[in-house]
Length: 181
Image 1: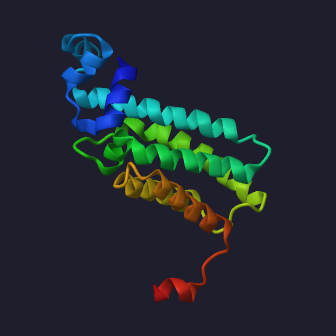
Image 2 (image 1 turned 135 degrees about the horizontal axis):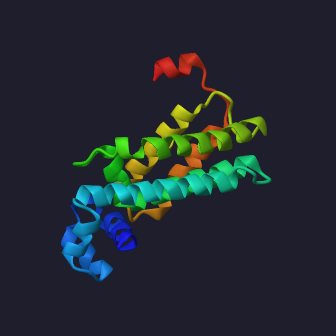
Image 3 (image 1 turned 60 degrees about the vertical axis):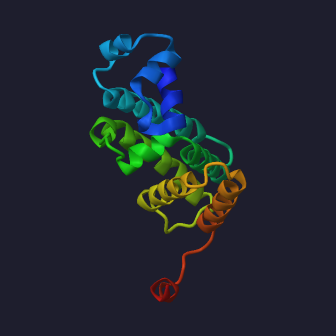
């Protein structure tokens, strides 16, 4: 049932009817309601599961031989999946549901794992030193929300990722360049 909900929410976002999720799972709507009293509760479970998958993936990459490539691999995955899976965009934009409370613990775990990837990449000289976890998460979130508007343009997604990774590799912008923009 959770897998069917993941697929449905990823394809259609929060707008997918609960009856459709039940149909995809091969069960009746009553069965879904017995496990999840509301569609929002099911959505929270799906998002929690997805974020936990990211935590596992990030932790697996922490010990990679090439810390820079490990971080960049993770960023590519997040931006690609975030750009094509409507549930992530709906969760981040709060499209009718607040999942922040349900995700607070696992979100901290994700931030910690990504911060470890970032720190290792910075120590290896693969990523500029003036980027912290807050900036990196803002960049990733912004990228997949922006690419969401062009879900079928994979080439655009790839170009966006290249620009982001190039920016992470580069040196810090001069203060006068920032204030002039």
